[in-house]
Length: 304
Ligand code: NCD
Image (cartoon, rainbow, N blue to C red; front, side, top):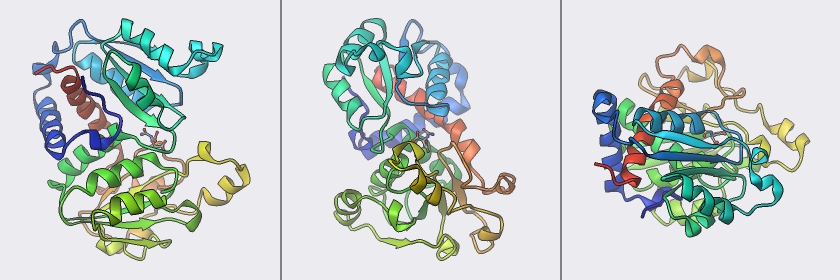
């Protein structure tokens, strides 16, 4: 039985297969309508979510399956003091696969050790978010037609942004990928990502606090929100939250085929005037999320 806890749980070949499968689902959705008949997905969300939970649920429904679950810890027996391990053992009796989001880093890994059904990490604290990364890879593959030879700007909260950590880890396995890390010092990329991913794999990267400095070099600009829920100090959050706001002006020197991404939710990081720019891909990105999750559910349930 396979779980998806970290994006590295999948080989590059497996990721390529998932992307190919998602593209096939997009072109022939009718071939997949019954694939998960009589199967149930449980979505256990101990933290807020719109896209991830609903795209998982919509994915399972489009495969002909059913969905059970909860959207906050407070509406589950966790509020009575039940452990994640016990919850998982029980939910495994009622479902065939579980997507779980939790504020504690490592909680989905702990869950996977006790589970009798596959566990998908739908975000664990400020750590990882592998299914957002699969969404991002499908987006890049569809919009840029390649996953190599790319210069990727990552902007905003690189410290707490779990989507950033998983995306860097995934993209570091493709050829000639370079990163421009755009953040204030306080929200810079964690040392462990620098050492264990970037430096270990000899990946070229530059750190800057200026969003415009390398704009003309970027193939992808990935904006992120400052992760309010990870701050201990509200004043600090308020001081940092609106530092980067992408506007039309700031895109003046950008390439004509730049792909602007954002895992969403957006707070203020991208001015709404950018939404009409053909380079804005973030709403399409959310759409791709459903198809790659359909492909992932099929893979983990071993359905051809
Ligand atoms: C992201 C997350 O939950 O980490 N959202 C998502 O899943 N699309 C990004 C965020 O919350 O900022």
